[in-house]
Length: 200
Image 1 (cartoon, helix red, strand yellow):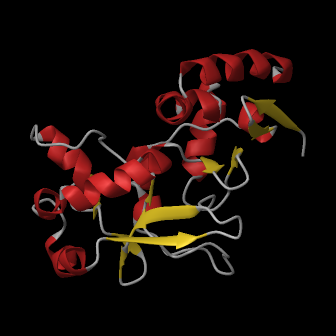
Image 2 (image 1 turned 30 degrees about the vertical axis):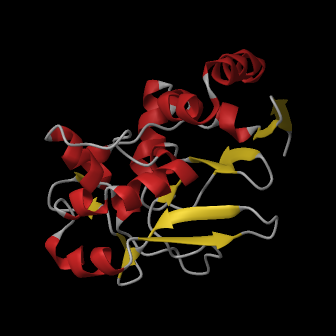
């Protein structure tokens, strides 16, 4: 698949062409609590974290614990996060899961992330949701410096693809705020310029 190099990041062609807009009323945040698809080769972890988010979660662990679902509290207190090294030698960070499936930040009863619930009460962190979560369906691989469209949750996100096509919203437009958080405004502006080459 063709890629565009933007400030050292290889951006996959489908980032510009995929139409996507989350339809939470339909999916109920299924990507936060659904088991991985059969045959998936990715780690069974919760929401991905940046290094800074990882540090902040650990620093504010006691505060976050008050908003974690009761059944997950014991696991959260014991082991809220995880980290591992990729083949490229890059350390990646994520939330741990409850019973190997549900992200420890998932509040299915409230339809939101535990950190979002904190923000609603004015007690939030510097972010209202991990950037890798709000970036979906885009995924950034820091080891390969690659930004691409993931199809990990296609079964759960069918309504999001339909809504994107119906409203003519492309994936990179839908996750604009997350791209700005990760890469900054100059990157997003250049992304928009390159996107014009893929307009139908």
